[in-house]
Length: 121
Image 1: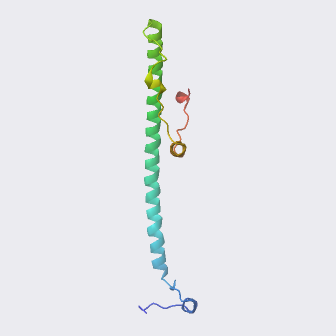
Image 2 (image 1 turned 60 degrees about the vertical axis):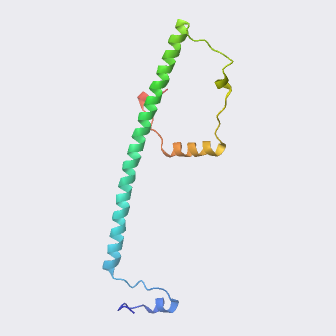
Image 3 (image 1 turned 120 degrees about the vertical axis):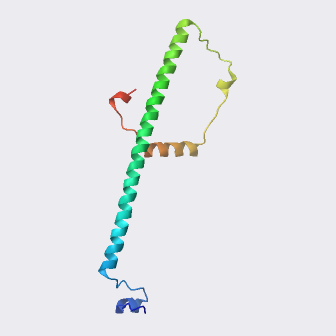
């Protein structure tokens, strides 16, 4: 019996006894508290990095859109832009399944970018 005493209730129910020393229980609890704290810290660092990267990407997308709008306006003003309705690429559809859209929305909703005064459209 490994030198460990079993209480009568655990013997009666045929269960392993929880008659452990307080020191052993405290050690286990502290060990796992530390692991949880370390994991939470790592998660916070990763989330902060993810939010920062999403914000930088959003800013770059906004700048690219503004640049494209500016270029379009310049081309229209100079007469270089000609809109054609017979472009085969315009008729091509590349669609995502509803399940794929749902997955993308789920991921996007997990990490939201806080609105800043400079990031308002």
